[in-house]
Length: 280
Length: 248
Image (tube, rainbow over all chains, first blue to last red):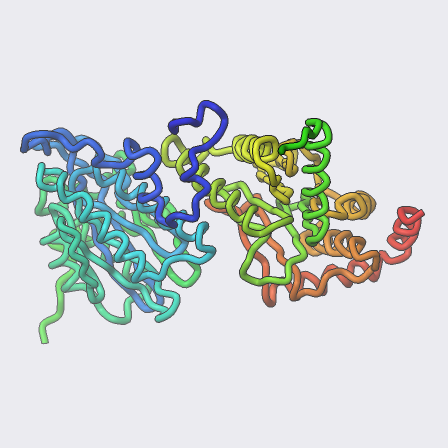
């Protein structure tokens, strides 16, 4: 696995004071493991990996939640109907990806190791700002691939232990980092999901209400965007929802999401366009 | 002009040197309890750790010269993280890490003039207590698969004897901590364990999700120590006799 390892000894880099960054370390000892190590030649190769679609993130008092639909598409074909696009990255943060799935999953996996590696090497976790900046650098590192069509757009949510609130960070393909106020959405159905959240969001949402808002938004996205999957009652495939509060990260149990998703679907049988916002 | 020194003598000198170095520092103990594995070290520093997390289920405890075992710790974290990233998180094992440490220490011991003055423990918590693994790695690269508990450091033998007398795999965390601190006290020849401020304590909690390593400090440590002191008080009759026997 590493040069010289067969002889029973690890390369000297393993023992040097060196870096606390996992990516930098792997680049020095085994660069072939890193995503984007061997970028494709020529353009227009994006058809090689499916696209992950819609993600919704929103804050509520004392926390933040991240929800994603389950569909991945490849052109007009549904490539996967029960995909997991949300990744717990440490006790107080999670990342979701939209865009080229193959690249995005690898990026999220590397990012997760990166955070944990830093925490173990240094004996303390990165600040939430530090985590957000680190992800920006990694997205920027994928720019070459993005130019080939493999665009990955992540969303980072985290609970900030200093300010004691949930925060949401969005990114563009070149690694631009933007902090969002209250809510955000990315992916093919994001325009519709964001519009939906905008009309339902309040500053005093309880956690359960926030989950409901996210599920309504994903329903609206699936209603308007063919690449976003809605709740699938027959196959029992429902969106995934991760919640982060001062108690840490928690993925909501499938039964709870199912119950709330079924409520949303039943509500739509009476009002197909969903809840309406009050005027005035 | 270089003098001839017999290889046996050379190895013996190196071993004596390493043993003396390790004996200058304080000891550490690693033992099973009902909920996993407990690691306790006598450490005056709050920031220069002797006990650390290596991976999801695997912890590291060391005694001896800090810069030397810190290097080994960093190496272990890097090895484990690369392995887990390359394959899967379940593919990182305590046995691999113990082997890497043994090979590294063995090479240093035989090839360089100055051996490293360290002694390590690699502990991995399993799904059941029968699957727990505890390895002790010494300065010359020997590796020992320990059962249930282990002590490392200059006075490891005395500490080990004290551990053996009181060890119970079904002990609660508080009781196990009491056993560990009283065993560490034997190092100084007394009954008084290290002060709470000098205790570095961590656990590998079997039931915990994701990463099982957790440090215990502050108020939680204080309340566990109180619990341990209470347990020792009620069982003091039997406890003192076994200790007396051990002294003889």
